[in-house]
Amino acid sequence: MVLKKKYKPKKFNVLNFGFMKSVKDRWRRPRGIDNKKRIRKRFAGPSPRIGYKNPVALRFLHPSGMKEVLVHNISELLAVKSALVRVAGSVGGKKRAEIEKKAKELGLDIINLIQTKTVGKKEGKV
Image (cartoon, rainbow, N blue to C red; front, side, top):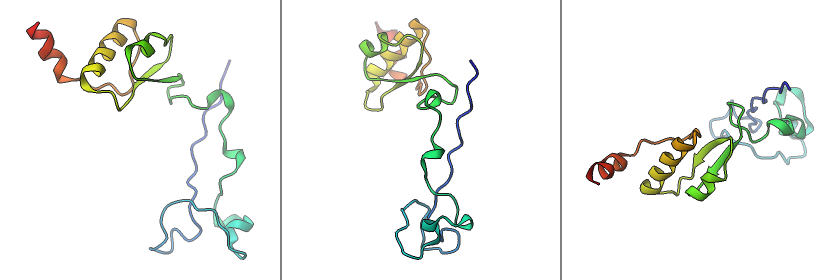
């Protein structure tokens, strides 16, 4: 099965973003009665609409095309069959090192892999 590519996200800006320094680079829905962006004039730039959504099969995938799973502990890691693993940011160094070690044994790839220094020190002492 050949999958389509994900759409590149468009940059949706406020109408006068490039012309006025005070207008920030962000999206706010235009609400003025004469606002050209609200009326959808072509020169005003793109506005967020349902048509910019990615296909269902490609939504929430990593750019490599694989599914991504957020893991907080080893028991969640054991439930993963074939996917990319992302270790939660709230996980500390010791538990992260255990998760990385177990993932290596299971042959799973970790996206946000951090080489922790504590692992080598503790294993050397034991």
